[in-house]
Length: 63
Image (cartoon, rainbow, N blue to C red; front, side, top):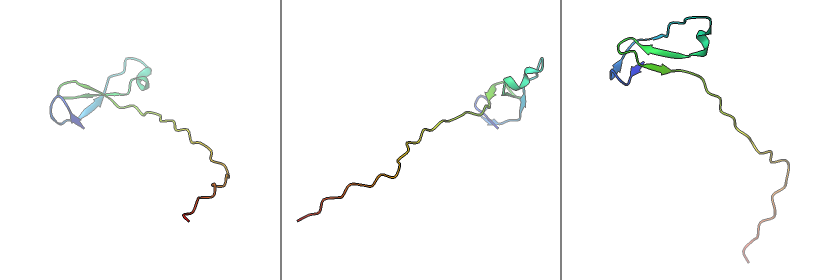
């Protein structure tokens, strides 16, 4: 991955876990400078409006 501090492609590794809660902290550490990068999935919710089976109104015509 690209490290913003080192300005280069650097290897990243997972932070050492002190207990079983390692999945709660999804960050990776740069092996060069130690900068943490959070890599967590995000959820995007989209609400779609149901349009139904309505018929479009008749359009006006030019004379």
